[in-house]
Image 1 (tube, rainbow, N blue to C red):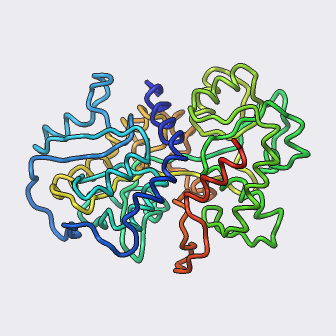
Image 2: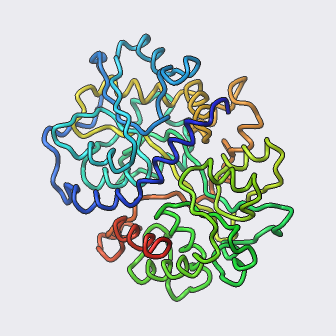
Image 3: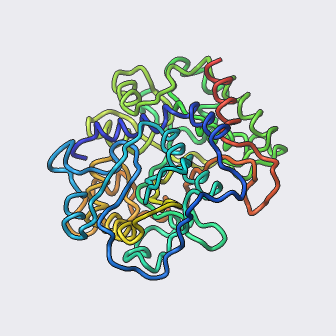
Amino acid sequence: MRLTATARVKAATALAAAAALAAAALGGCSGGDDKPVGVAKVMSTLGPGEGALNLLTLPGSVESGATDPRVDWVTPFQERTGCKIGMKVVKTPEEMADLMRDGNRRYDGVAAPPEVAGRLVEENQVVPINPDLVDGYKKLEPKLRKLLERDGKHYGLPYVWGSNLLMYDTRTVPPPAGWAALFDPAQARRYAGRIVMRDSPLAIAEAALYLKGRQRKLKIRDPYSLTPAQLAAAGRVLAAQRPFVGEYWDRPADAVSAFAGGRAVLGQAWPYHLDVLNRASRPVQGVIPAEGATGWMDAWMIGARAEHPNCMYQWLQWTASPDVQQQVAEWTGVAPANPQACSGDRLKSGFCAAYHVGDRGYLGKIIFAHAPSKACGGGSDKKDCTDYAEWTRTWIQATKA
């Protein structure tokens, strides 16, 4: 990675807004079958570009050379297509969701994290993508392509992805087998005060994975689709763990410094953390727990009120290309959705190995995040699960109250 500071800013803003996003889900939702005024149609053919493109992103997702002149995949796109990009950079997923819901706003595309993407689909704030119009679509990882597929329609173009692992200091902690190392009080007590956890309601999913094997009577299937009873059980696990947690990190840099300085020896981490610490010769390793690891994907989605659909499709093709994917991965410190970014002389082999690019076996072990919803997964329309607002309340009560 050349410059990881922006990656840390981007990740921090995505995690720090968890509580606020819940309030937005309660108060700002268009909900149900109500469709926005002026809904864009699913494209069947492409025409000439409209000369403009309005995008909505979190910090670091799109670079135009303003941060560093060497990092720019916007200017070449504009020169090649004639589509001039106007970009709104938001600080939090909450702000992103609110702007997409605003009927007076007409964003052509949004680079959405999982806690936003699912809601936009449910609320009809985005339209399906026609993959036949995106050159290189089939080069993207198959598992990622399916994450935003609904009833045979594709609502997102995979952009970048990552995983949530169990990281430990090899000098102090024996190789952990599963999430019990963090969530079983008898095991966590051994490292009291030196455990770190992500500060995000989505981290409830790891507690749910732990319970899936420990309390089979709960019948947990999808750690991101929890009934009230399952969510309450996960909350109790987190509350019991709390006395042993030294830090809940919302900036990835904080987790790096905790392990580097010896304040942490065990905790949740990303391949980014492992890469940074290993390159600094720190004795840490990461494992996929026996119950599985969770992960996330950011995806480009087309706004329901898009005014420049032809330019948007040209942008989708551009961001899916190996050369752009290589730039995005290096700048943000995450895995590219197109494994061809590791072909030829693009990304270094060490980077690709560290972030498991193109490793289908690794991807198969990852349970990717989606926005918790009242409607349980598996195609069920029953409203017997819990939504993101309920997850946020549970997280706050278990870790902060």
